[in-house]
Image 1: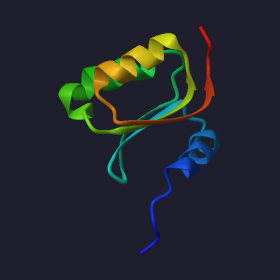
Image 2: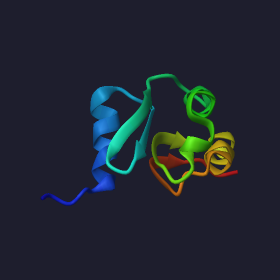
Image 3: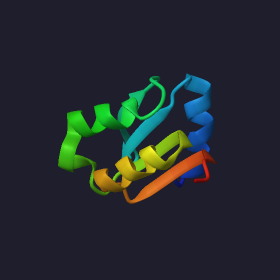
Image 4: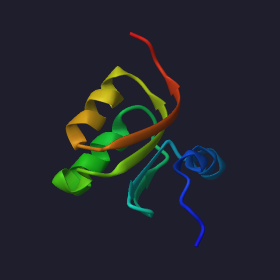
Length: 85
């Protein structure tokens, strides 16, 4: 069995034209092409407390997205861009 490599998911996000993917283990439970914090708000609305313990792969993480990730209870975040400030 091939080991799951979460860092390869940034390539998948780019290839599929997505801005956010949410994993529960190795299974994708949510994905979105929307920009900004909208995907995070949609995921929170759809899954609420079920996001606790998930892994989020976000194309760009700014301050608002970071706060929503913390609020959702994700245990891991993978991104290619983090804003300062």
